[in-house]
Length: 282
Image (cartoon, rainbow, N blue to C red):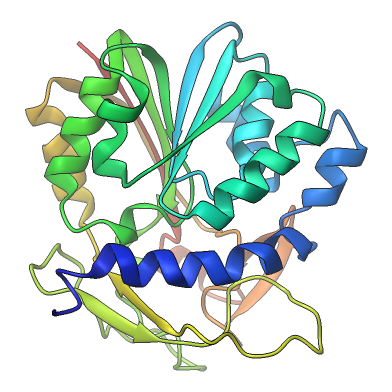
């Protein structure tokens, strides 16, 4: 079976092995969320100025991983926060986190691929669909994803997404001294397959290399995303591009700028690293 056909099993194995190390990493602040009832994840903290109030709203968090962002959304006053993820090990840690942390009582989790979200969460029941950093690169079709988002939302409900910019995903991260385009910017039928036995967050110095190294990814151009949402009856209400990203995406070319965010050491105006897009269902 080729990588594209088997992408769910390949990526699930990769996330299952890394999830326990992510829960130990200071970058996810998993234990801080348990010990400090007011703490919010770095991702959600960054989102606050654009996210606005979600008080008493029902939120679906697609591709929630270990739920540090899901819990943070609950702490912002959401009536409920439902996380969906492909990885059972990620969800085990998500449930453990929310079982110990303040606000976790408002969180629940379902296991499945993002394209199963309507079946698992319910049609037209959500006020907000939230998707965080590093989610869309794991799915082959942005059109199908947009259809899922629209079906999950109530009329007037909104999508909030902050994601890695497709221009960033197109760059060769192994080049240390310049910005070099290597990978597709636009969605392609054939995925990009990576082999990497490390992970994107800090782990213990004595941590062993991971046994699973393969991941299967796709990029989706910004225009493709906007068009897909418009075609399913979503109205774009905001699109902001940012000069920072919450991990060291281009090693040796970035500097930490606070709150776990990284930016280019020089010439930041050359490249958007992430974007925030918002849309409402008409």
